Amino acid sequence: MRQPHSRRRFAARLWCLFAGICWLGLAVAEVSLKITEGVEGATPIAVVPFGGAQGGDNIGAIVAADLERSGRFTPLPVSAMLEQPTQPSEVRLRSWQTLGQDYLVIGRVQPGGGERYVAEFSLYDVLKDAPLLEQRLPFAGAEQRRAAHRIADIIYQQLTGEAGGFAAPVAFVTVSGRSAQERKYQLQIADADGFGAHTVLSSREPIMSPAWSPDGTRLAYVSFEQGSSAVYVQTLATGARVVVSERKGINGAPAWSPSGQELALTLSKDGNPDIYVMAIDSRALRRLTDSPGIDTEPAWSPDGRSIVFTSDRGGRPQLYRMSAAGGQAQRISYEGDYNARGAYSPDGRYLAMVNGSGGRYRIAVMNLATGALTHVSRGPLDESPGFSPNGRMLLYAARIDGAARLVATPLAGGREQVLQIGPADARQPAWSPRE
Amino acid sequence: MALKFWNGAACLVIIAFQGCSSSGTKPEAAAQSGSGRGGAAQVGRYDPADAAAQGQQRARGAADAAMGYRAPSERVIYFEYDSDDVLPEYVPLINAHAAYLSANPKRVATLEGHADERGSSEYNVGLGEQRARAVARMLGLQGVSEGQLQIVSYGEEKAADLGHDEAAWQRNRRVEINYTGR
Image (cartoon, rainbow over all chains, first blue to last red; front, side):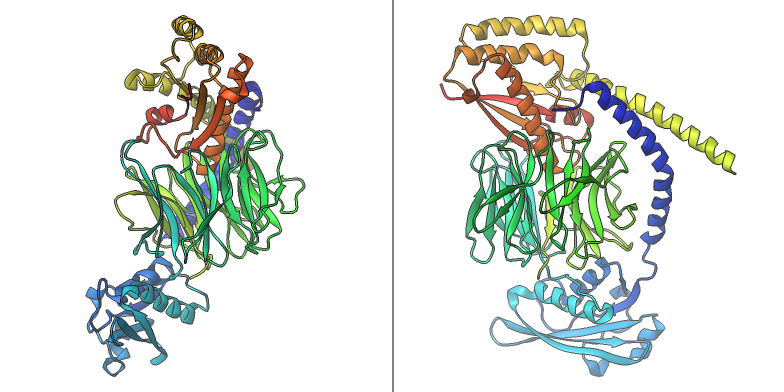
C-alpha cells in the first residue's frame, strides 16, 4: 500500500531540504502578501443609510459591507458622514468631495403594496460631479437582504465592469453538540455574508462536501445517514433528492463537470480510493485513476478538459492533474509537504489548495501558468477553499479560537471577514456560481 | 555576494535537516506525554519491553476471546500522523479480535476509520479507510472471513476528542472495532 518506511523517511528528508530551499522564496511571497493586506488602492465610496422603513439591518449597511468585503472599496463610516441624503434632490456632491469620496450611493425604501417594497437608489460619481445610475428594485419583505445584495451587485458591476456575486448563496455544513450522542450535522445555505441561513438537510450522522451544480439549482453532497457514505443530488427548489452512488466503501468528494452532465467522485469499491466520473442521467461510471494509494478530491477545470485531484502516490498528499478523458497524471504541487483539495478559479488560471508545511495548514493560490504559489490565509488549520463566482475572493474554513468558522478574503488583498453564521461550528463551504 | 548566498543556503540546508530530524522524533515524544496525560489513548512510541508486557496482557484477552466468550474490551487502534501503518504494539490486540471473530463466525465487526482534523476532509476520509483496511488485512491474515468485516471511514468528521492539540489529534487517529450481529 505504502512505500517502505525507510524510503518514506528519506523522501521526507528530501522534502525538508526542498522546503528549506523554498523557504527563501516563501518569505518573499509573505512580504508581498503583507503589503497588499492593507486596503491600499481600494476606492473610497460613501453608502448613505437608506431612508424609509426597513425590517432588520439597513440596506445601505448591507451594501457597504458587501463592497468592503470585495477588497476593492473602502466605504466611509456612517459616523464620518456630515449629512445623510436619501433623495436625489438632497445630494450636494461638493461636500462628499471634501470627505475624499470617489462615489456616493443613496437610496430609500417605499411600500409597494402588501408585503411588497421598492428600493430606489442612485449612484454618483463625486469627482465628475455627475449621476451614474438610478434604479428601482422591487422586492418582497422577507427578501430585503437579498435585495440589498443585488443592489451591491449592480453598483459593483457599474464601477468595475465585473459581476459582484454578492447575491450568490453559500452552502456549508454546521456541526453542533459537544458529545457524540448530541452531535448534529446540518447542511445549510446562507447569503454570502453568512446571514439568512436555512437548513437543507439535518442528520445525526456526518454530512460532507456540498458542491453546487453549475446552474446553481442543485447540490451534490455526501451523507452518512444510512450508516455509510452515499452521494446525493438534491434539487433545491423542490427539496427532491436522489442517491447517485451508494457503493461499498467510500462514496465521496462529488464535483460537477462544467456541463452539469457528469459528476467526478471518489469511490473505493475497487479496493482503495480512486477517481471516477459518473454520467448523471445514466449513472454510467468511468474510472479515471488506478493507483494503490489515496486518490480523491477531484476538481474540473472550467473548460472541462482537466481534472486536478489529491493523491498520496508519492508518499505524501500532493496535487496531480490529468485529462478528464483519462491517461497519465502529472504532479503539479511542489511547495510544502502537504497539498490537497484543489479548486479552480472561474477563469481557470488559478488553483486554490490546502498547503501544509511545518504542521501549519494554510490556503494557497497557485498561478497555473507560472507555478508561483501565494498564501492567502494564516492557518494553522485552514481547509476547503473555493472561489467566489467572479474569482476575486476566496472562501475557506478555519479554526478560530477553537471554533470552526468560514472566512472570506479578497485575493488582491484587503481585510478577511469571518462569516457570522451562529454558535455552531461551520465547515466545508461552497460558494454558488450563480445567484 | 554569491559567496554570501551559498553560505546562507548551506545554513538553510543544515537547518532543514536538523529541523527534520527533530520533527521526526517529536510525534513520539508528544505521543508519550499524550498517553500519560489523557490515558484514553495508548499511542505512540514503540518500546520493545513495554510492547512485550502489553502483548502478554493482550494475549490473556486473546485466550478468553479464543474461547469465544467475549470480544476483547479494548477496541481502538491508534495511528501516527498521515500513516496507515499498524504499530507493533497493536498486533496482539488485533490478533485477539481475530481469535474472537474466528470463534464466533456469526459476529460481524465494523471497522470504523478516523483521522485527526488536520488537512483536508475528503483526503482524511481516504486516510481513515486506508487505516481500517490495514486492520482488516491483518484480521484476514489471521483467518477472519471477509464477510465478517465491514469498513466505514468517517475521516475527521467524528472526532473522539474535540480538542485541537497533539493529544486530541492522537486520540482521533484511530480505527474502532465495533461488533454487530450474534
